[in-house]
Image (cartoon, rainbow, N blue to C red):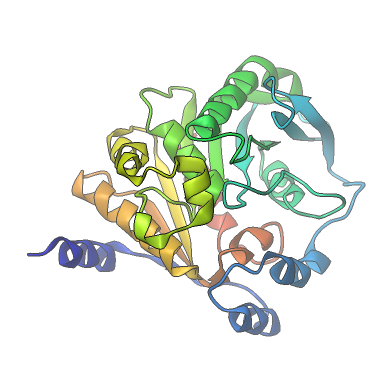
Length: 303
């Protein structure tokens, strides 16, 4: 049997779908935007549903340094009046390896992910990282490692448990988390959520961001892909893509799932019905719990 047929059979046999809880008019607007990345347009749809500062139930400390670079910054969110040490959720934004930030101006993104974490019994850490072309592979994984080291050493004073760390990456952020996990041994990481990332680099896509980060010499890309290391990792995974995702990211996620299942390590896997590449993240901390319910269940099972 040909490899692509085997992959298709494995994916179709084990894929689960979560039904979005978007209001019908909002779901129609997301679908109208299609399967391309339209971050500003998607952000405008969900911004009215997001909380605005000052946040009633969260204490926030911003721009804490976790490394020497000017972009090695993180924000910590914790609940007011919390006592017992809580699991820690570290979030990595996307941006095609060349763009993005943990927050821009007064945008509700990605504070929304942190506020959801706090309201669900976690301490939230929202990090940013170095960007291509100034920083290339494996700088993203190195920055994840540095942030995890910082959290391990410092999060107790914010009410977090440094032995219960969860990584959550979206798009390029998921790729960086995957590269970090592909390295050996992460006992402090209890689990990881990988949403719409890249794990088996494909030069035929000719993506400028991938070439800027992973290098123009595509003969090196197989070794720089995380898929084989992820297949060997013992860190539990929740891997996610959107129904209306960019086709490349959808294929990447399905291929990773198939690879893990071939190694008898089938992950928790989710297809978010009615969502796009950006709406799956922008809808977090709204009434749509199609993604966040799965994250909460995943953390509960692995904590």
